[in-house]
Length: 225
Image: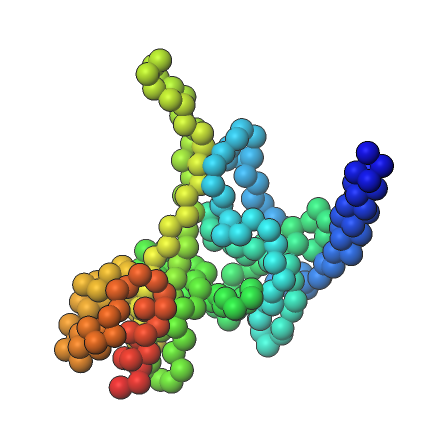
């Protein structure tokens, strides 16, 4: 029993130390505004499944804007299309969405792009154009919200409120418009004009379009020509 108590006290001490050691980073007010989003505003304080965030926890990242490189604890709200920055234990602000904004969280880079469907929106860089005329690939992730539904009969089941996140890929050649496509060979080939050399490359490399690594192979091939 004593051993268990000692372990519990040690865990409590460690957890308290970690909370106290949490470092917050201040971001100039020119680039943020007060947080306006609350999950309870949508759910009415009730239970729900899923999340409006790509990652619920804040992660260390960088805010690149107007030539400045600012550290921050960041997460992306895919429902409202905003990046949130935690600047204190209970203080969260949202980062202003500007054309020159870039966000990095780990290896992921996000920028503001314009799509035919959503206008200006944050998008993750999947393939970066390295020279003029190159193809770039972006991924836009959006969360939708479905309200809770009560059972309508004894045979029916109630359904809790739910957030669902879906992603859409876009191709952009040079400074051209963003064009949506699916993670399928047919969709990619149609977008790239059913290029015969590309078709042969896909076949010889047994590309199945199962993930983003396959997209990198395809568009790296196109950009090397």
